[in-house]
Image 1: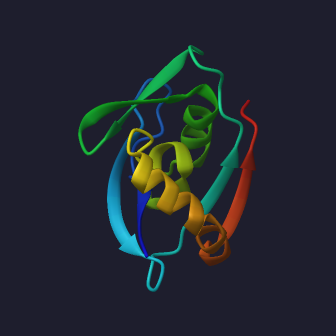
Image 2: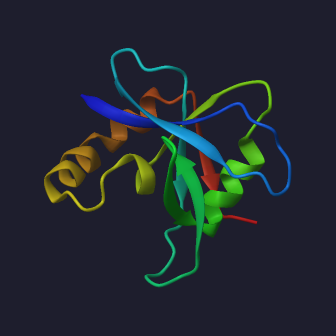
Length: 118
């Protein structure tokens, strides 16, 4: 029952500052409070935005980028489960297992956010 959560770091909320995150590993038995995000996936080839995860560049959809910009805080870390980031999309075995856990992931979340973008 291991999952990854995206920790949106407390950071300056300046217009041109990059979104800074960390990937953390936890279990559904004792996760930190997190928000599960339901979102529309972009079509293949759609423009992407870059965020920093664990210090490395990671591409995300424009909708997810706008969510992270809207939810960042200069005072508090925030935790999110976003399927397009927290599931390794290139690992079919992991993807299948995590998709099977999605009901529990959404049930354990403090809140579910439906995000359509700007």
